[in-house]
Amino acid sequence: MTYVMPRFDDLPLDIIREIIGHQVLTKADLCNLRRVSKNFGGLINPTLFATLSLDSKDITRDTPDFLKCQEIITALADSSTTIFAHTRQLKFDASRIYSTKETEIEGISRVQRLVVERIHDAVSSLQSLQFMNFYVSVYYPERLTTNIISALGTLASFEGFDNLTLNENPPSSSFSIQFLSNLTIFRMSWEGRADVVVSDIASLLARCPQLSELYLANNSSSLQELFAKVMETEGTWKLKELQLHGVDVSPDAMRAQARLFKHLTCLEIRNNSSLTAATDFGTICDILQQEQGVLLKSVSTDYPEDPLLLSYLCSHSGLTKLCFDSGKKLQPPDAADSGIYMEILERHLETLEHLQLHAGPLWTNIVTEMGLLKCQRLRTLRVDMTLSWEQLLTKKKAILVGISLSLLNIRTD
Image 1 (cartoon, rainbow, N blue to C red):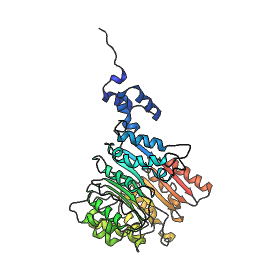
Image 2 (cartoon, helix red, strand yellow; image 1 turned 90 degrees about the vertical axis):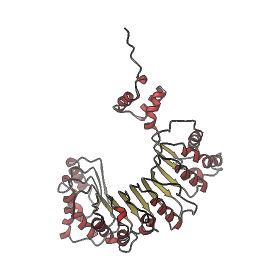
Image 3 (tube, rainbow, N blue to C red; image 1 turned 120 degrees about the vertical axis):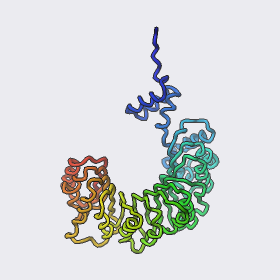
Image 4 (cartoon, rainbow, N blue to C red; image 1 turned 180 degrees about the horizontal axis):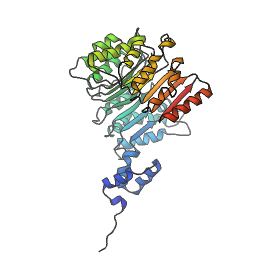
């Protein structure tokens, strides 16, 4: 009896996946595997094309990458390719295409028309798409943005924006995200005052009961108006991470909407336009703790000397991320009071994984064996400080010897 060993690509898919999963494969290796057989293509494509980047920012006369964007969009719209069937993330930035004139690159106007006309069908074909990075340029025709967002609204798989940036001040009144709902992640930044955008965001948040991560950056809006329509809904919001940059966040507004943040674990407030911003963060933390029982695991602020915040951080343990930026500052405390910073570190040394701080005189001793070497879970450290090269090398060596960091970034002034 003769036994013929099957070819590798004839093996069951689960066995092939197991074999490939234990190999260290480069992008070139994956490309080569795809060429061996269609069977391998079905296994490799989800890894190789997990992200599709349609980015034109590097277009020049000598590198006509806009042709590649055009070809991919056409292939997707015509359903003539299946390699993006498992694509989970889309990055789109066509600003270079639409800011370029025909006199600069011949044929660019034809490409501009094609992208507008075919982009809806192209995006709609990405049936596994979950997230998008979308840069909305001032040069875009209104139909382009509308076609993309309406296409996203047809995808049951779509979960939200890793980054949605409106590069127009103020944003166009035609901009709308009314086609979207049930997102889990929404990260958006825009400039200037635009009531229609604020209203649109407020409506969207009310349509996303499972939203877990929210980032909003704008210096002309407030927490109260952005969350007004969510407050009109029933049930408990699932939000875990809230990052607000430039938004007016007052303690009164947070107290009125506290029930929305019952599940909050991460809070970041920067460039708060509230008149009492210097002490608002600590007050807000107390409100969340007292009214909803929230103990934050991640805190990020540009008011590191907020006395109420420092007191809050000393009142409990379990913090995994702490970011004290070097932004707006209060009058620094006396040297005699500097022990409060060490007390914060002591409180959270068993859980702290990410630390970012601006190291003035009060922080100097922390960036040594006295403090950081006790934080055995610490993996990311970012420090801004004034040190001589000799001091820097000494402290850097001490840190590296004591703890295992995946990222060490010490910036000297």
